[in-house]
Length: 418
Image (cartoon, rainbow, N blue to C red; front, side, top):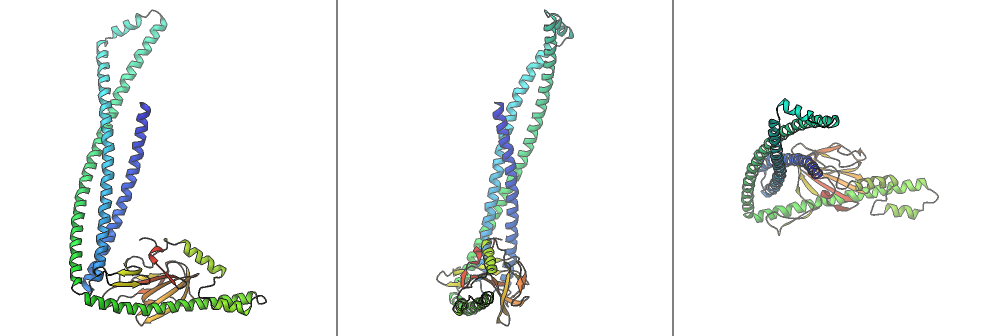
């Protein structure tokens, strides 16, 4: 029985430690979500003031709703963990109460017996009535042990009473904390309903201007297609230049064995013919897929990769070769990995792009107002490449692309989650 009790206590202690750690992790997660909600709120207020079209406003509103739903789920997990803690503590309290009842009854019986044989004469007669010295000695030892046992029981009763008080105080605190979580959760749900109403209001306003929005999308798609063409040419030129260098290096290293046909084959390849160093860099870049840093210090993806349905008019499709990341005014674009700048392209006087090569991978940072690097520069992870442009509507958006040779990839699968 004692072994089972020790096992139960060990499980309880382990559960408390795990529960405490989980509560701390959830509290950190809540703090992060609340910070993201505050950032979204600031961006939302900025867009409300300066955004002519409500499309971006609706997207930010959707992001806020998603974050608030995560916050509610986190609070629910906290409340569940707290309920589990309270259940375990209540079990401990029940066990302590039962133990105290048994101990107090046992102790009371001992007190009664001690009272009945309390006189010194009775104890002396108990010893003197022994048949021999050995029996007298054993009776003396028994009386000492009986006295020690009574003292030990008294201390155990005191210790368990103090533990019971501590568990009651802890349980009372947990009840108060749970009540706070319930109130907090209710407020979060009310806020979520308000956000949904706001989203519905924005969506309704958008439905009134479908023709205008369709025109805006068409114009933007034409501009995007033109810029994508420039980016593709930039990458093809970088591949051709890299292959010319590789062919020249091979011919110099092996002038007797390298034929003109081999040189021409390398130079005309549509994919980069990697040198050993280039292969190492490409392998390293690929190995970090999903863990690469964001090209901005903070922000959120406001337009995803590939064909994106309009948030209100599902028949209107926006194609995106990369992702658009909305950030704060004055923010910088950062290299997501070590590499070499192959080209700085001027798309317009106010819109520049930087292309960085990582073996046979390319990353492109577009919509920069100023650039800090030049073609041929070696760059390191998180190095500032330039300042992101804030347009006349107050939006600061980085267009970011990743490609292997000329094949685009979804940047969101390569960069880490913020």
